[in-house]
Amino acid sequence: MSNQVSFDYSLTNGFISAEEIKMMESVAENAKSQLLNKTGAGNDFLGWIDLPVNYDKEEFEAIKKAAAKIQNDSEVLVVIGIGGSYLGARAAIEFLRHSFYNSVSKEIRKTPEIYYVGNNISSTYISHLLEVIGDRDFSINMISKSGTTTEPAIAFRVFKKLLIEKYGKEEAAKRIYATTDKAKGALKNLATEEGYESFVVPDDVGGRFSVLTAVGLLPIAVSGADIDKLMKGAAAMRERCINNSFAENDSVKYAAVRNILLRKGKSIEVLANYEPALHFVNEWWKQLFGESEGKDQKGIFPAAVDLTTDLHSMGQFIQDGQRTMFETVMSLEKSVCEIILEEEEVDLDGLNYLAGKSVDFINKSAMKGTLLAHTDGHVPNLLVNVPTQDEFSLGQLFYFFEFACGVSGYILGVNPFDQPGVESYKKNMFALLGKPGFEAQREELLKRL
Ligand SMILES: O=P(O)(O)OC[C@H]1O[C@](O)(CO)[C@@H](O)[C@@H]1O
Image (cartoon, rainbow, N blue to C red; front, side, top):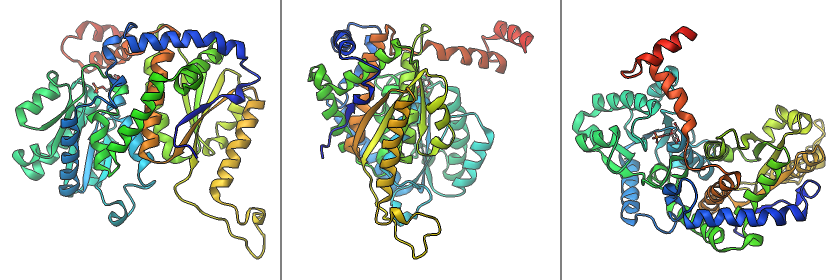
């Protein structure tokens, strides 16, 4: 079995012709050149391209050291962040570690429990997390590139207060790790003022492309996952993305195929997985493509499902609803654990025909059956094969999607590296909250409510 993440679009046979691929090849290669030559829109945010081989080695070691300290002095790590400052770490930890990471015994887990907050504005969620922490030892990793995002800033106030009450100001400062801009922003100022250990989100790496910076790496390292292997996986995929020609370039081919499908009216892409551990990879991917491509009234709407779970809820729509979607299935080739179904003396549940078969074999059969059923239902199915549930595969997968996203955005004709649309809700929220400077908008909005 190969250890490479790979892309297979052979099931789109009836939907896409060889000529269409041929025509899109030059468009995709052109987009790739724009990306690599840094001649396209948003070219000041391309630091992620070289990250897997050109990262700050000193900081990398500092991350490992900080992770070891947290593992040593904390029962709980509270990760505060939203969007790109949250999803990558969670995707990695849920993929790489135990399915029930926080609830499994400490003997099995060996590392601190990890909770995420600052990714919503729910007082109930925050209060319940305070209860979960109780009087246990904890540390905070506050992550915000801008240092000004409202959701994490609110959570930070609450958890910083708890930390200071518990340990006093000086000791609390030693338990706060700030991941932010190297020079500017409220969080950076606070970190300098209070003496928090700081990690950098590089200027030229946007939030949704930042999982391989300290943004993702510190929480991932605390969880006990191997960040060296993660970087190696990303570096291996980078090599293929940059150097391979179209025929051997899975990431660029994926970008090309999804744009062909878009031009044929398939404006929704459903990312599917058959392993719960991939759920947050779905979530990370949704932000990556949603923020990168959804602009100027263009883009493919990124949706996601967990299968077979959602075959019992969304399956009907995918099979038979409005035909505007295609599906990209992440197939984990080798499952970590194996369970074999045993024969029962009396076959009351009618499952004896599966005796001797593994649960993963049944899962794969469900997947193969669904691939064909959805294809027959006129939903083109693309496959991303993920060899193993480990760091090397995940590093490849992250980079595979990031590179495809850059290429795809340029094929689409948008700037994949900005997100002007997310400001609108913030302006309204600030106005309604009475933030100084938003007085005029406030009056306007109140009249409409
Ligand atoms: O790291 P920050 O600056 O807090 O931003 C978090 C997220 O918010 C956004 O800026 C959108 O509001 C995303 O692009 C980003 O990933």
